[in-house]
Image 1 (tube, rainbow, N blue to C red):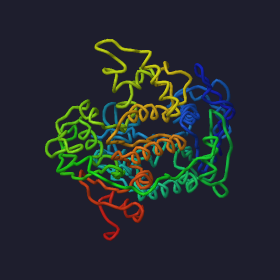
Image 2: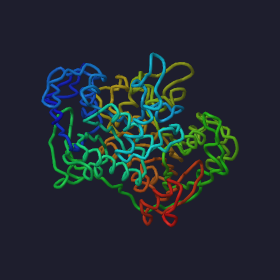
Image 3: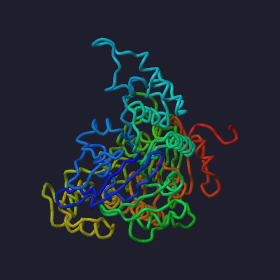
Image 4: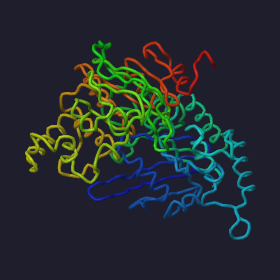
Length: 504
């Protein structure tokens, strides 16, 4: 029994997203699918999950050629997908989330909750997922929410399961637990396609690794013979530096000071609760933590996007607690937001327009109400060249760029001035290894030029490799500080879960 994609070609205007790509996964096998942003991974999986119809090629499941016209057809064919961004209703229970669209009923209007609960509990017990069927999803840790997504797939009798960046928001301990779950699925005869940017995880979990580049299949390797360096070179087409190359920090004066900061979330709960820390010129301070522990609200408050309830924020000794985002920007703060498409870019605007979003109202781009578009175009082209943004023209919508190149547009715009403080939230979220290398290099350059740098990321490897000091945030508080050159990922990971190695 096997799932096969044979010679899949999918064209869009001006681009061939998949060019004669073939991929297979057998029952009881884990196949890792790697590739840069824009390599064609998502398109290929959308073909398999019925969201796109291929222009050429065929999908064969267990020897039968199928036309997967929509996701429901794929689900009926035994294909399930666990998305990177969970498709859950926070205020519903686990059972209610699992049976959405699959409600067992008595008569016409009555949902048989006992049958649904028994179904969820049976799947949870069988695969050792340890999920309480009656728990509210909003009360569950991220790792358990992911298990709910897995249960949703399994109760629909999926035999082939796609995991899209499944470890992006998990701690090291949760990653190991997740891998045990995946191995259990394999042992039960499920075929698994594992999409990831994390090369070490592909080497650890996969039976085979398939690499895409520019819409084509570059090759297939065995984890037993492959290395991270080989995989990165296959993905990018050149050797890639996988470690952050930086000298020891030489911290000087305090640039950012946060004292007793209290910030409310959208539900009026104190999600940042008395946070205090400092960041000095010439150092990178990383904040590690599982998403949802107040990091987003902390960054929004420091950058003027979200008001604080109490506490004080100073930049270069100046109180900016009540300042607007523009005032904080003009104080020399570069902000790389965690969601580039929602907060960092206007997707319908051109690259040029996005490059001047934070300076369009002033010289050299405008005098009064009149924009100097030729000057803006010249500046945008310079930044595209300097920051290696892959595009044919600067007058195309920024939405046409890959995720990595969109992120480079933001980094170029924010760093192209005299910066005294960099605040980067998940700076390489959803970005491929080539762009990660480049963005990390630019961040270190800012530190070496004397800027203070604050990095916030749930990616523990990123925080420890970039940072000179690591602070851990849990339930709205700073609960620990580590020297990344001496602390283990286990110690930091346990602190991210609210405990320490000595307590285990």
